[in-house]
Each structure stands twice: as C-alpha cells, then as structure tokens.
Image 1 (tube, helix red, strand yellow):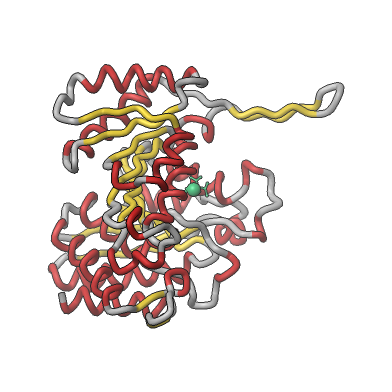
Image 2: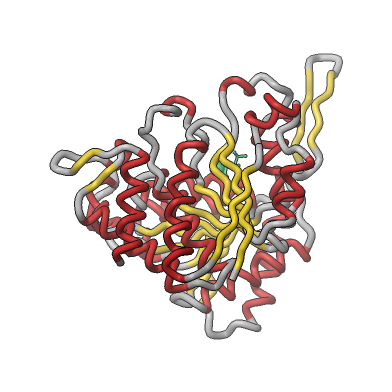
Amino acid sequence: MRYKIAVLPGDGIGPEIIPQAVKVLKTVGKKYGVQFEFKEGLVGGAAIDVYGTALPEETLKLCEESQAVLLGAVGGPKWDSLPPAQRPETAALLALRKGLGLYANIRPAYLFSALVDSCPLKKEVVEGTDLLILRELTGGLYFGEKKRQRTDTGEVAWDTLIYTSEEIERILRLGFELARARRKKLTSVDKANVLITSRLWRETAERLAQEYPDVELEHMYVDNCAMQLIRNPRQFDVLVMENTFGDILSDLASVLSGSIGMLPSASIGGQTALYEPIHGSAPDIAGQNKANPLATILSAAMMLRISFKMEQAARDIENAVNKVLEQGYRTADIFREGTTLVGTEEMGELVRQAVEEG
Ligand code: IPM
Ligand code: MG
C-alpha cells in the first residue's frame, strides 16, 4: 500500500510537533509494510511570509491530491494585526476546512489513567473520562455573513448564525452513527430556549432518533453542558453540536484529558480528511522544545484508523502513548513532581520507540 500525506506544520510550535508525528508514522509504515509519502506545504503565517496569502493555491492542491492531511497549528502575534479575513486562523484554517468539505470534526477527550493527577479536577470526578465531541465545522457563526459598518452614532457589526436542515442532518446522523459504535448515548447540545437555529437542530435530532432506536438521545442546553462536563464527565459518550459551541466546549473538555496538549482531532466529510491537534500555535513556548507532541501523535493515530483503516496500527500508537506516560515521562504541561520532564523531541522519540517495540 502507498499513501500520500500532506504535511502542513504551520506556525509557532507546529514545526516542532509535526516531525514527532511524522517519525511515528514512518515507524508504523515500516512495521506494517505500508509506504507513506510525506509532502510538505506552507500554511498560515508561514505561507503569508512567503506567498502573501495564508492558504496558497499550491497547498490546497497538495491537500486535494493527498489521501490525508496532517496539520500543526496556525497563527501568531506577527499576523494578529492583519484584517480578520486575512489572518491565518480564518484565511488558512477555516478556508482549508471549507475547501476540503470537512463538515465534521471529531474531538475525543480521553483521560489516560497515568494523567489523573495532571488534571486540575478531582480524581473521583475525572477518572474514566472517555467522551467524544462532534463539532459541526463548516457552518454556523464562523461562516455566516459578517459585516461591520459605520452608523451616525458609531459602528455596528454582526456575524450570522445560520444553518440549513441538510447541514444539521448530516452532522447529527454522524453523531448517531458514532454513538452506535460506542456506548450508544448521544447528547445533542443546543440553546433551543433562545436560538431558532437550535430549534431546527432539536427537531431534526428528534426526527432522526426514530431511525436509531438503539441510541439514547438526550438534549442539553450548552450552558448546562459546560457545567455538566466538569461536574460529571462520565455521564457523556458522544456530544454533537454546532461549530461555535464545539469550539468552546472542546477546549473545556481538554482539561478532562489532563492538558490541551493531549487532545487530537479528525476533520472528515470530504475526500481528504484532515488531522490536527486541537490546540493552537502556542507562540509563547515556540522554538523551545517544550511543546507536548502527544495531541499531534494521537491525531496521526486517528488518521490511521479513519483514513487508512489501520485499526491495529492506531492502537499501537495509543498503547505506546499510554506506556510512555505510565513510565512517568512528561512534557512541561503535564509535569508533576516525581515524574520525568522531557522535551518535545524526546517525547516523540519515546513514543516512536514504544511503537517499534510494541
Ligand atoms: C480550533 C481553533 C480554530 C477554530 C481557530 C484557530 C480558528 O480554535 O480548531 O478549535 O476556532 O476552529
Ligand atoms: Mg478552538
């Protein structure tokens, strides 16, 4: 087998974490006799500096021609003053998701038991957390009409939260399917007491539920959900929600996994899926070999599972991460007294070795 993977390191810690996942994938390739062909592309601020645009035509083409995309992170202070439409976050990341038709973003929040003490919440609360946030990724507030205008008294600005029933149905359907393959519980998160888009969302969920009698469907308001996630995370299996809610609640859920540096993600729905850690480019620690590469490495595991149907190889990586954590190795974000502090490279190498030996 031969697979072409587009590699987009991006900005900040991106160029440090991505090589760790790439070396793990190379080891997997050798072990399973699969040839991964890696092709690098520029994206985000790094692309602005060279091409003057955050998502150059070449990069989008490279992604379209590949079987999967591995992305680091984009953005940084250097490009923060650009107009919103040209910033790396919107011009690269949102455009890439839209361009590739990736309407579904899967963000599993899993707590490795070795990291129970890295979580700021009580052990009794977080132990056994294993949930999945399914975020709608190409609609809603982030993609609706945006405008800013002068008025007689000052200015007015608006973003539009808009959803079609088709967009809602396809993401909910995936939610039911994912729940069916797990513990069969789907929490549909909305704000139906206020938002009309949420009412359409809720009615659609009710209608689809009839096709999935084996899946338990519950509705939860987003504000309550934020509270429930830290109060009793074990009550959740799959949570499905619109774009903005998913952006916010997935950061919140990352605390349950010990650190935002632990949460991987897969964006699917188009021909080529994209895999990236949920965290950002962390400019404050960039270039210091401090970043946690595990979210990116776990994103590579998701790539193997979802895009290449290499379930055993995906498990090899997850088991390797588990082993290295059990052995007490920690990057700074998950470090506790009595554990061994390692840098980005060392952590990547430890996981790579564990995959090779496993
Ligand atoms: C994420 C990020 C992005 C998002 C930003 C950088 C545009 O926060 O992937 O969660 O909002 O989707
Ligand atoms: Mg986010």
